[in-house]
Picture (cartoon, rainbow, N blue to C red):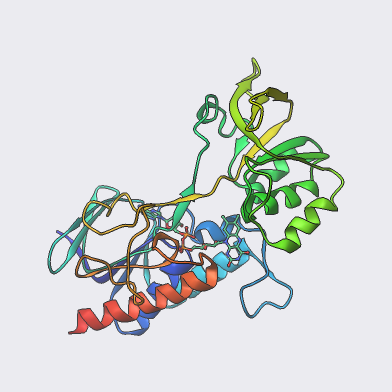
Length: 307
Ligand SMILES: Cc1cc2nc3c(=O)[nH]c(=O)nc-3n(C[C@H](O)[C@H](O)[C@H](O)COP(=O)(O)OP(=O)(O)OC[C@H]3O[C@@H](n4cnc5c(N)ncnc54)[C@H](O)[C@@H]3O)c2cc1C
């Protein structure tokens, strides 16, 4: 026996939660699936300063909790399960989560994106033992200690600045000689005395202590090939994100980087399936654009269900 919904939304980040709200308000019976913690990447952001309505900014985790509360108040069914399989057909989709098969007329993919790993020796073994992908989640474990951050974008620069306030020393390792971050944050970097910048360097491998903690980071100069050893307590990998599109990539068209190709309303190449938020191919991946995508996709999916 299937549980049947008009619209199934997979992922309770800002895109999915907004899609669920708009779907429900359009009179649809909506199920929202979330495998981890509602809020998605927002929960990892420190203070979000560019989401309208919060003159002093808002903690990402608070915004995530407020959105979840709003979804609950609307009486939307939240299924706290990771969706393991999505089986499409012409007029409906089956979703398998926690061993149960759910049936939905329309599907909105809002699974967002996840951290890119460095894929260097030692990394996988040291996750949770010195290696982290979220400064605001794990920074406190290294309070008063020394850490390295690897990456060159907004997330890496933001993490280095955040960690400089709680750690004694922060080394920022970047493969290139310029950062791809906001000029304001780049300026802040150069004015922060406990951040050391290691340009043109890449992480080669991680070594551990006999107690199974991070001992050293071995880096290599991209200019000379010379190897160096860095002794720090923690390593924060901020090497970008990859879209969580695996579940649908075999039947929905994706771009070269794995982002789902979708039109302005989020319609994908498969009838009855929409995509919203960071999982879709687009220019700007932010909370505001994710919520906008969610609203558009739900509106279109609801119209399709009603037709
Ligand atoms: C450190 C950091 C700081 C940021 N700072 C800002 C900022 O200041 N301002 C701003 O606007 N944006 C910021 N962003 C970006 C913003 O958070 C994202 O653009 C936004 O969260 C994308 O929303 P989304 O709903 O598309 O996806 P996500 O937030 O990635 O949410 C996707 C959700 O889907 C769930 N999911 C995935 N697969 C499954 C599955 N199979 N079954 C069930 N659930 C699944 C995930 O658990 C997750 O909760 C930041 C991001 C990071 C990482």
